[in-house]
Length: 234
Length: 106
Image (cartoon, rainbow over all chains, first blue to last red; front, side, top):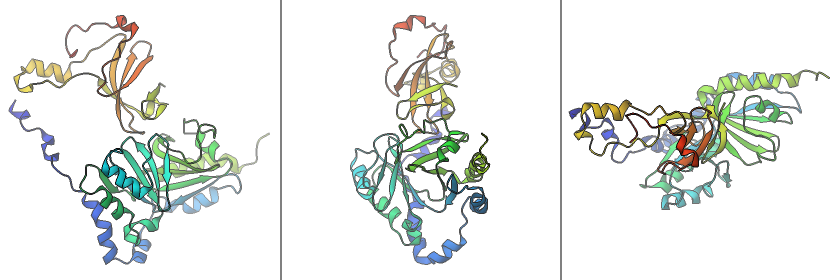
């Protein structure tokens, strides 16, 4: 039994410092934001012209919104730290699908104690914003996580009167407006890959796939859009 | 395809979930005191119930939370979904349960 006297997970005990949360503010001082921006390449940048040519005017359009600031937050909503984080984001969503928006960010519900704060590119500390720092400071030393996940996912925007038809080809959620209302975000599967689906307008969806799935999902959506580029078969 | 009702997210496709094996297998109170056979039974021996079976599932592409489910292994009927830590619900159809000859009915 000596093998079990020291469980292998004992090394995980004790406070875990989130080193990566501290870096953006530091790099902001040393690097030029314009240089940073020019050096970056988004996960679906190679598909930009394909998205443009695959979009059908007035019917369905697809584009990538690159480099959005995303911060993963894990905290108990009922705790003091939860209340402090809620004051930064304008509140923490309570139930599946709920999103909370304030002037600096939108907060998505991912789990009972897990949230994703999404903000425009310029909110990131490396480009002169202060969102990550504000959230890290709000959490303080309390149990929880604030992690800069801006590079984890990219954002696709699918819009137009046929956007729902395209999504319904590979997403088994009920996307009818009666059930799936504007301002709802759900973590689910689209085209057999995990992604977050956020309905931002009546015919407007934002999809957050992981960066490594961006190429696949982009091409998958384009394929779904192709029928609407052809004349309708009576 | 099963339609599984996640306690947090509501009904979702089976493909969004992962299976976690038999539920309510408690960690031995004093693992050091176990014989090798008892330890092996804790680690590897599970019931192979015909009928209602309590099992763990995780909603891996949704809320990423674990929960328990009572499923009929013959008909795949989902009889109950309940949270981690809650006791197994007592169903009137519980008499269908087969008893396991030995192993992990801990």
